[in-house]
Amino acid sequence: MKNFILTAMLFLCSSGAMANIISCNTSVDGNLISLEYDDDESVLYENYSFREIFFRGWGEVTCPAFITLRHLTPDLSDSERSVFCLNYDNEQKTIAGYTIGERNAYLECREPSRTFCERVNDSKDAAIAITGVAAGATGGATLATAGTGVTAVAHSSGAVILTGAGGYIAGTLASIGAGALAILTSPITITATAVSVVAVGGAVYICKE
Image (cartoon, helix red, strand yellow):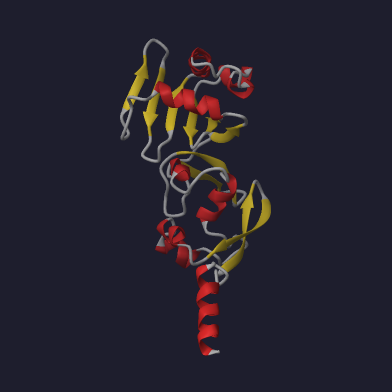
C-alpha cells in the first residue's frame, strides 16, 4: 500500500498536477485583467528582478511584468518575445502596450516611447520573406537593403527587424511579395516617418506611433 501511495505521489508531481498556480492582476490600457501563472516556472525568475520581487504586488497590479508581456504576445516563445519591452503610462498607472527596446528591471522600456507594436494577421509567409531579406545579418549585425532606405537587423532572439520610413518599408515588403498585407501598406503606415517591422517566430509585428 505504501509503495502504491508513493508511486501515485511521484506521478502527480511528474505530471505537473502539483504546479503552484498563482492568480494575479495586471492593468492594460486602464483595464484590470486577471491572469494566472505557475510560480515554480524557472523561466519566470530569469525575467524577474529582485527589485520587482520586492516592490511589485503591493498595489492593484500584482502580476510579474513578464506575465503581462506573455499575455500581450501569446503566439511567441519566451525567447522570441525578448525583443519587446512594455510601454508604461506613468500618469494612468497602466501598461499602454509594447514596443521594441531595451528593458529596465520591470521589463518596461528604458527610453520613453510613443511607438507601439501590433501583430499582423496571416503573416507567416511574410515573416519568411522578411527573414530572407536579412539572411546575411546575424548576431546583431545590420544589413542595409540597397537603395531602399531600409535597415535590417538580426536580433539575438531570432527576430529580424526592418526599420525605415513608412513608404520605404511598404516598397521593400512589396518587392518581397508581402505587399498584400493591408496593415503594412495602409496610408497610415506609408506616411509614417519611422516604422519598424519585426518578423519573429512565424509572426510579423508592425511598430509605429
